[in-house]
Length: 400
Image (cartoon, rainbow, N blue to C red; front, side, top):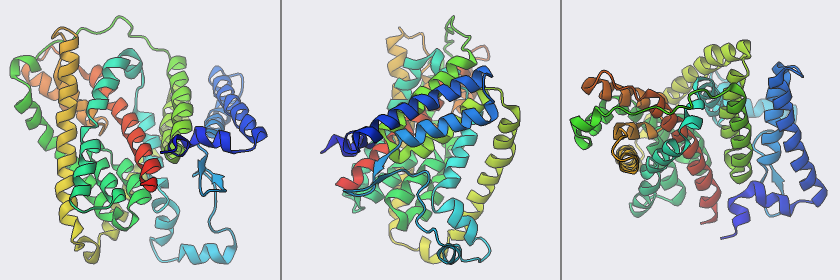
């Protein structure tokens, strides 16, 4: 397999005219500089931080549209004339909302921006090895479900889309299913959001089943490095957004949204933070639920593949939960049994729900044990690893 087609952000640098490739690298650097100057207050942060992230992400996230055409998933209108646009909108009640925000995954990106505002990447920077290792193990469901689904008769795209349910990340499932299995994106996304509620009810029992009571009460010593500055967090956001957009440009809108939201919070731009958290996130969540309900017609749900999807979705979440706990045990053994493996369940992103589940199960055994900071680090890494897996699937599946 041609690696330039897998890591297309990097591959397009060698395909494009050298002047364009160099200009992209320069603009990425300028974007990083604008974020830094905005954070310092040298330039207006209200403009510079969004502009900087937009500049670095759009120049990093270039992919192949065809053998002769490159572009991005940020701005590339399919319909530009007025008549064509009005025809596409079909002004019928919720159709404009569906066309402008749902069918193009914009609503998923808005939710991701809200998640970024809520996230504290400081926990990732305090415990990077622990957080990422657990998150990688917690991708067991998103990886193992894929071959099982294909063996049951689903196409590669459908198999990958239902496997992403194992990430316990609704917007990610919406994004992946629209890209890989558009004809089944409604039942897959509905299944994902229905099953997310199972994490509250099911994962506590999984924790109790796989982790003995005496181990669940283990107290974890915190690192001395507890102070992570906002500058360090923004630096992480910028670097991670640039690298991941370069490697997986097809998922660049998700990376951009998450890390921009987090950088806005860390930069202390209160008005934008309140707007994203109190307006954008609630608006997107409301219409996400509403549109999924409206699209859930009888003819769609009666598709014979839905039963298989129901089983596979539950299997994906179960395997991811087991994988996360295995990851917790691995860290537990590496640290000489001075780590609490309950934290592993938080690696299944669903932030912050799984982190709260982990803390609740630990508190029920030992009220003095506080593991929430470790759990939040694993949960945030779970969001990042899920986006990476999604990027790999969306890049690789079309070539199979």
